[in-house]
Amino acid sequence: MSPNAQNGAVKIELGRRYRFAASHRLHNPDLSEDENYRLYGKCNNPYGHGHNYVVEVLVSGKLDPATGMIANLADLDGFVEREVLQPFDHKSLNQDVAAFRGTVPTTENLCKEIFRRLKPFPKAKLERVRIQETSNNSFEYAGDNPEGFER
Amino acid sequence: MVLLTRKIEFAASHLYHNPDFSPEENRRIFGKCNNPHGHGHNYTLEVTVAGEPDPATGMVLDLKELKDTLEREVMQRMDHRFLNYEVPELAGQIPTCENIALVIWNLLDPRIKQGKLHRVRLYETPDLFADCYRSGSDGAKAR
Image (cartoon, rainbow over all chains, first blue to last red; front, side, top):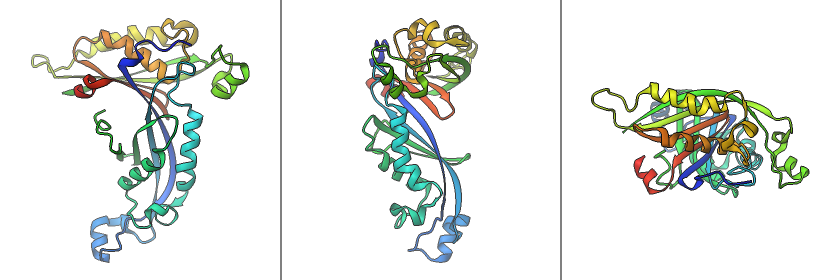
């Protein structure tokens, strides 16, 4: 199969959305009960609460002329399933995910943790992770990539 | 700089098949997208143009012109078409979301005269899309 003309002048990214449901509680043990409540409000509820998270994963790379793909979706889906969806879906982020034992599971920190987990994806370059915590709140992390947010 | 985005939707069919691969390889690599009779999607295209608003009109570019360009270059070419067989720009290529987005970028880029094409985002489904940007230092600085 022939490569798409002028591929070199254009940068292409592939975006894929995944969903998982999890609970969390925003609480910093170094702060007093009052300070925690003042800072985190109802997100400090001791029993936690949950969200339907939407995770948008963007990867870049050269288009393989034989497949027309940056990465085979089955590979990306399998990697995200193993690294993120299985460990996070229907879990308590505070109690079930080791990374959040000493870190407050805000969605900012969740972005960074998911980026860290997906960065080793071998078939394409991870550019960005964007998470919608609700339809009104979203967060993005592009690692150390200085161009990551210019798009 | 201001970014302006116009969205259009089109419906088209396609299939993934590389004649250089064996039937088994085609099925393994492309899965159900290899069905020989094809299948279809409702594609959503977002085209973003960057520029400074013209002081006289307040516009980066005339949306009517952009709408006409999208109608001529994308809708007439791809809407209700079988992408493998009816779109010459995709001949000899697998019509993945990435390749279709790139064809659309290459069709639109020379035809946008006011402002500069900034991004083409093509959704194949709400959960799968491809983005095209200008690459290299020119693109990075222009953003």
